[in-house]
Length: 216
Image 1 (cartoon, rainbow, N blue to C red):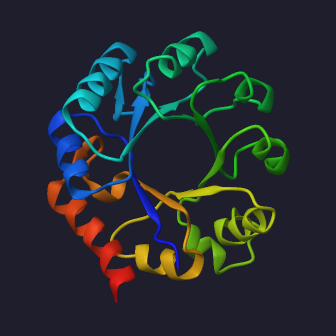
Image 2 (cartoon, rainbow, N blue to C red; image 1 turned 120 degrees about the vertical axis):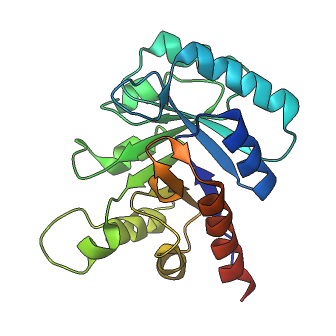
């Protein structure tokens, strides 16, 4: 059984980044230039931070720039920086827009508010990120709400690569691993004391919980 990789998202400080990488996290994500989010950092600071990170913290981790309806020229600046591995589109970007991004992996977030054809979109990106929210609760009812479990299986059956996100924390991660064994899980709020403030204790406990699941 393959081991699920972990992405810590909404990273902001060098201290928390260095600690996460020392713990062995696989991906570190940044919310770039989206002032509506308390986790956002300006584009200039983001580029400075990832340059510092790549030069000072060696490892196999990858850097993800999360953007929300960002102009293509700014995304191209990020992609051309040589420090970023993935651009994650989290707004209303179209398949045509996604196909114009070159030089990095492209992930597209999808939730119950997204419009269009998820299978069509998946053909233009490297991965689909299912922003599931409280996916486990929704999967137990027939309300017609976003069912990340069923959608994950549907995409997996069609050979679409998926990232699972939303509502994941140390208490429920083992359930997600058991039911889906996803390629990648994305966590942000579950390792924080407040929006944008990462907890070393929570990061360490989350990594340990995942590692313990696979070593049991």
